[in-house]
Length: 76
Image 1 (spheres, helix red, strand yellow):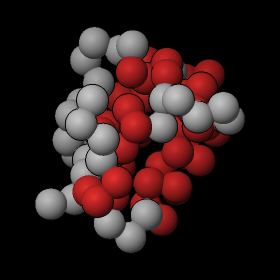
Image 2 (cartoon, one colour; image 1 turned 90 degrees about the vertical axis):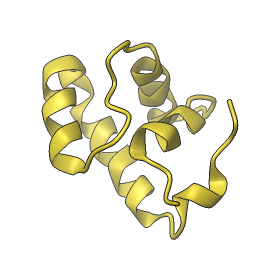
Image 3 (cartoon, one colour; image 1 turned 45 degrees about the vertical axis):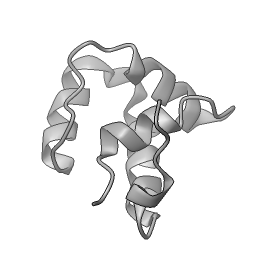
């Protein structure tokens, strides 16, 4: 089963770069969608973390580049 973007993003929160900073902010959001495609997250982040649009796009691009994101999921 493929890991969702939300799951993948939570796994990135410890990184010390732009994506890690964005992931840490997103992890604090109480209503982050658990599942959905890019249109769902585009709309969500447009209304929540507008100032981090470039970081979101970078994170989404990295997520899409992972061949099997489900294989990298942590159990946290």
